[in-house]
Length: 485
Image 1 (cartoon, one colour):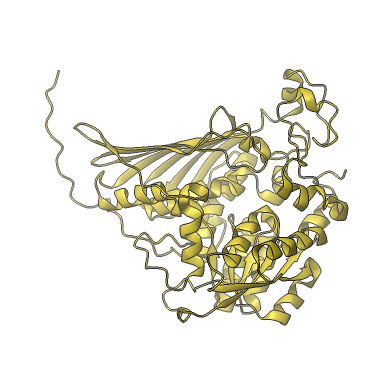
Image 2 (cartoon, rainbow, N blue to C red):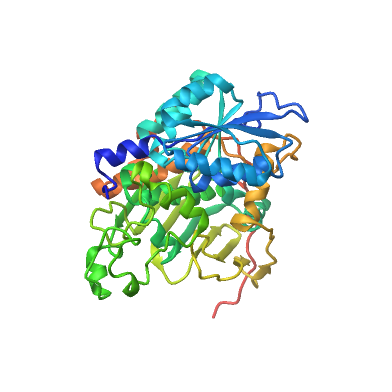
């Protein structure tokens, strides 16, 4: 097996990519697609993440768009896409290897390119698609370094095209409800946010066995995972980050911890592990039919192992992280991410001039191959006035992936007749950059021990258009008098 950070391994990973056409332009000046128009899409990078877009275009949104071509470094995965298309009763997208990405664009002249390769290679395909006159849909994070973010921002201005960054967390009904409550002004203007995200040892461990464990490819959990969370705060506040201070370490997913658990390892991968029976972190890649088809059966083409040992010494990402973010409007965020917790989910609290909003979610661990079904998400939301009794809020709920957010987001992307969204949940390249740059800045803090200003990372980052929130200069009602004891 090749280690994840060898030159040969990097060459294999670098080819992964996906492309497809954006359903509607994101800026106010762009003309919407005519009702009933069927747009053409291509995908680059057809691993697990791409399946959501395939299913949307072969299912509920087949009247709105067609997936005409797909591109990947791995011919086994392209064959798997063709089999999935046949099962869905859809024409198979024409297959292209990654080296033929530009030819795919010339052959099909798609409206939009869907980009879902490993994170570090998003920028290459995004920029090439924009310069070819295509719009782009990209998975989060938009990219992994400040230089790559700058390339993308420059390409948007140069090309006049736009990017949709798919932050499906914004669309989860209960997170949308939090935005709605904050917009209402019930807790006044927000002075600080306390946000703590927990990954358990099923979902959290999975990042340490995949390509995500190589920071050069994923940007680490600060970029790959926390960009979701930073985007939520940016959007909840309708604000832009200006400064970051952070500390991070890896102390759980280490060779030393494997030995503390009584193992003799680490070893290279689960599939050939001599201690599989003794390790409760064992991951059976052959047990899940989709993962077997996409990875185990396809690894003969590129040598990528989807089930690498979580205790490997060469892992370069952190498992314990703490971040402080300062916002342009004056709000301060205190954030933590830990990847080895007893439960999965988060707690967030907004401290405002009129009270406090507390919101917590215990999540079902959505990880391929997992067998620990925890049931549905457990959601609590409450408003606590500055002086007065707290009030529990009945959470908005939905069905489907990411708390019901995936279906709503996909309709917003692909359906030209989707209703106007007062919460402005669609994110473009500005929102994509604002979120990943917090993680990029945090990674720099880990290295230097010094705070980082977002303005020192990129130039030309404009504020996205977001809903109006209560301002810090507005008059605040005096809270009720309480008896002093």
